[in-house]
Length: 333
Image 1 (cartoon, helix red, strand yellow):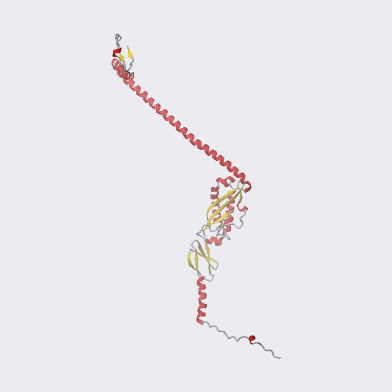
Image 2 (cartoon, helix red, strand yellow; image 1 turned 135 degrees about the vertical axis):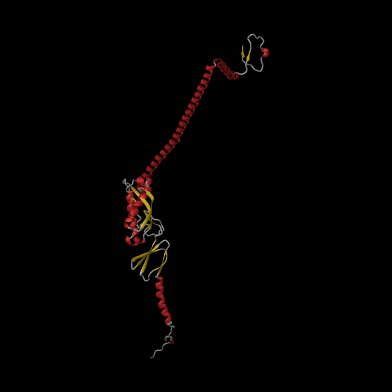
């Protein structure tokens, strides 16, 4: 018995869809434009304001270029490495600041051993410091030393341990910080120049310098005792500086007063001697006249100081009528 198929089971009659072929000219233009764009894209590069470009041709150093837009041979013939030569970089030891962009700024292993050091008197100290530097020679930085950033970290740590090992723990923690920074900077600059890192080290700065946590309390007590000692010395020096100049001033004042009194007495004595000699000379010429004059001059100086005085004769009998009643002057018979 023949089977009948439903009309819906028949496949639809599909019509062939044809797309318009692009013109040959367009294809040719595209084939030529794409390589040209690739050549142009790889022929120019830009150097940022804080960097310098190191150009390599077939992997060999060619030149360094300043910031700006520059041309190079395309297709990998010339390659450019950008080096931040106009930016101050830093390495941190014993700690790490968040948000850094320099991959060598912080050690990947921030452990206690990095900052733990032994001083010259065999004490332990935890030293944190910062090294600030600039890339001075891009060619040396890229090609003369393998991994210059890590090399700088290693020589900085070695130099700091060498300097700390020559100081006592008191110098490291208190009074010798500036001297340590200067000595470490000089040593690091010397090593960087010897190894030809192409780096100029500008500054070494000590941050936190503390004794280990196990002896922190004892060290604080020692520091407090030293501060009390310094405070007592400063107070004593202040009292000394106040008392000694005052005593010296009083002594100088007494000496000046004595010298003035001496000059006064000497001058008065010399004046009296000169006056006596003058009187003696006149007296030797006319003794009676000079004696009378001296007597009169003396009485002229003495009598005005005695006040009013009445001189009467011994034979006078009635004294009251002539005496003034408002005063009682001495009576000389």
